[in-house]
Length: 164
Image (cartoon, rainbow, N blue to C red; front, side, top):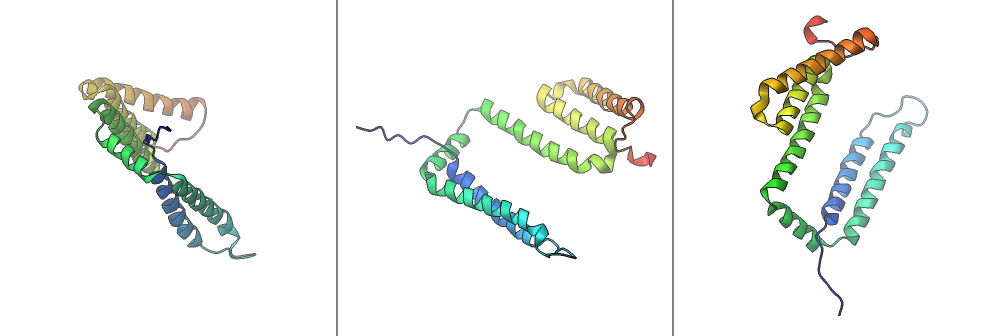
């Protein structure tokens, strides 16, 4: 007899994400402004190609996937132990903080945005009980790198917002 145990996987959810991403990306690509000269659709061809590829790969993944296995993987994710949940939270927080760093980088300047990013990341990885140590490390790193780049390497980084 053949063993018919279903192993949990994320294929169905990944396929749904791929199709959804492709549809949204395709709509946004089609909404791009048209070229002023030449073929007005030239700037749209490549992004639309990416959207079509994403939709096709997502659809193939949906066709090949087993929805029961994906639901089982989701249930395992919800019922996993606290250590794994804590690790996933740290990964999620890291992603959110990285996006915030990218958004604030030009507005707050290198020193402030890097200080905040490093201070929060050190708090996530080493714990909240070492706030002073984390602040010192983040401050020395951000100011030190800014000094090295601006004076020794003559590479400009975004300045402090109040020094412009």
